Length: 160
Figure 1 (cartoon, one colour):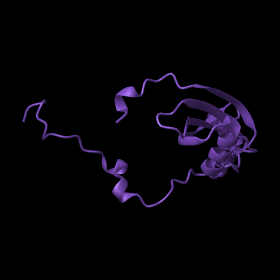
Figure 2: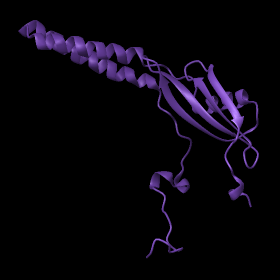
Figure 3: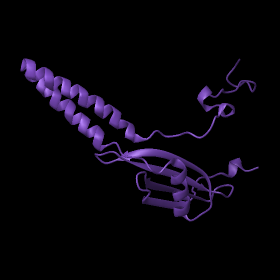
Figure 4: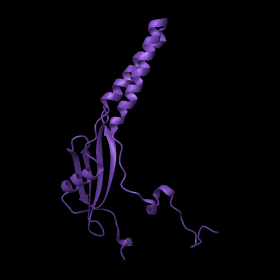
């Protein structure tokens, strides 16, 4: 079969097959970092106990380092209270135009990795005349920033 054969087609990977869709995607809550934090605490305490019995300075150094990592896991374990659906609603109200297609991405900002939603929105008309980008704090729902503009993309080749 040649590359120009019209019978040849592309196949989607299994994870993109819409016929196998079973429901909305749930983003896991970042509070799961506390589980790893407690595991690090246990390991650090084990290293500290071993240092007391052997006075090996390497064990003390490991206990301190692992303890610091545990503390970091605890202070970055934000409770994500705004899910992707609520973030899309907040973004829709923020941009000021009827929304058609939209996409949500969970990102993090700052040293403490505070979660935030980045929402890309297109207007509901066909082809979309407006687009916007809204960044929302995933912990308290405040709008961190928003940008809207006329859609500069040329959609004329897709019109029927």
